[in-house]
Picture 1 (cartoon, rainbow, N blue to C red):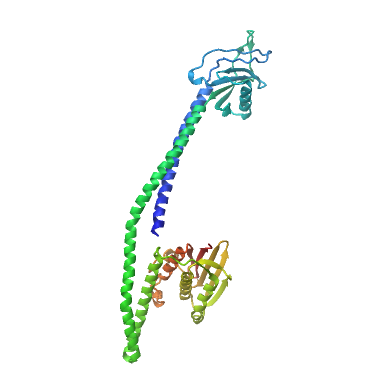
Picture 2: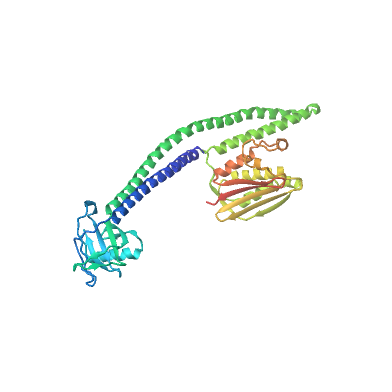
Length: 424
């Protein structure tokens, strides 16, 4: 139980910190990404035209020349000027690349149908910006060239900034993983320290119950033996009082037995049996053992039990739970009422349910029915010789078997307990 508690603390801590780290790193990364891309867009949109390499265009339009020197941060860049037919008229390039790569760059940019975009060329990453050519240019003959419907495409090498962003992402992943490992170790340490005190208090409480139970058993046994001896003497005057003593000692003996059983069942160091057994036969035996009580109370019993359902676990513990639930149903079923018992296989689970008519359980009490010593109706449970431990025992046993137990009720009508066991 405490191992699960420690794991829950560590898991909760790791989930919260992981979410916070992911959110923080994501915000930082995308902030830098947006700033970097915005800066690149600004640079590529303001890229000046300066020709080092000139490609002869259509002679009817002339070849366009321009000059100038680019700043150092624009050294890996080029411009493509396209005519109205989207054919390259001129290349202003500060990069020595084959003509085919420039043609590929033009085709990819035009096909993207975007004003801004990125692409890979010659092993590097480029950002492009397409804009309409709104200037009048002069060709080599001195004639004015009106480039209506022509385009200028600017290209800027952003490989370095893309690499920096990837390096930042990689750094975040490494740093995040390292931080999570360190936080995990710290969480485990503090979880052990925190749970240790709870575990000590719990062990003391459990030890107290066990010790008190053992201390009770001896005087109870003595009282029971003495009352048996007095009953044998058949003294009519004392017989009534002795009967009362006998009843109370029996009730106390049952309480102590239940407390001991609950303490042992909750002890995670005590292993349950893990042997295949027939659940259908186990349930039939439980019903048969309580058939007389059901008959005396004139209860109508309906059974829907699937045959030969096999399960690997502790048959005696599951039988005990079935007895608790059936006994509970018998106690709280109204006179001439009905009990429905179902056992079936659903996919990879075995479902056992027991439903009875009667006063039912209120919504307020539904969340407390598995608590120790909880009794919704103290007057009624007293007459039924109940201490409110049966359902607590059932819950602990089923959880130790990695199963689930639940309850649902319609107040004044029915109550239904359901157990789900996973077939191993």
